[in-house]
Length: 428
Image (tube, rainbow, N blue to C red):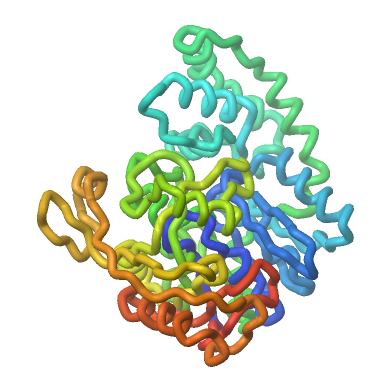
């Protein structure tokens, strides 16, 4: 049975939670394999909105086992806040599994994230200030705290002492902040240990066993391809591997076990934070997309930057991830437009460039080359079959499919979990 990866194919906020929810009744495990609480999934069920930041959105699907795997960095306070909020709304969270190898976000990570970003001034990256980058930096520098360390007080204290030895010098001497006490961090982390203990397991082993038992496992990526630390618009990226390859390293599952990669694209494009964005709109059209699409961050509430659909970005994501299927979301947002521009290539210093430039400088200066497609005025939020969409909406989807590098297998036509048009089965 298949292992399926869902990834964002633009700059994030594409609606990955909706795609996960679409498959929820047919899958056995949903695995978050990268990132932390710096991104969010919004899922609407029976008119109720659920905003998830750290938990995989599969936790809302009865019968599905949600997993936070080793590639995630976990703010334990946020984890329990999310769990408690779901419990208060009657959601069963008892099946949650947490990898013992996942790294922990501490108070000093959040502090360093915020002061470092302010220190950068005009060179700010646009982080969420939630300690994600510093936690991943400690992981790579081999001074990180892992979930399993919370169950051995002596090891935990030693690791916190080692991490703070350098960090307190930075905070006091460079950033003019107070030193952070070792005991303050240790006591805080230990306070979560007993509640956390029943959730913690060898998630890589359990996932292998699930696949061997012919269970369907869905890997749900945080952020998106263009924010990947290797393949995104560096340095304006996240600190983890948010492409399909990250599903293997972030979960302990070999790449040969992955059968399908589903890329999520909006019918237009958005971005949060700094960095290049060729199709960005600074006019009334951009604000129209922002308001109609409610383009404000699930986690931060920040207004998203908005622009028209970028086909070279989609093709790039299809290549990098090995996308087998695209899911297009928010097609309904475009209803009412007379003409819909789509970026099909770039002008870089007077030269037409068909693909995403390898040079970050060239990409930063890329000017979109647009083709326009006819819009439609009919309400499509109640449509469930592709043939029932207005002809011009069908034409738009088919045109996007032809230039995006893979087939469009499902189309979101509204915010509700049921508001989706399925063209091809995403599992078989």
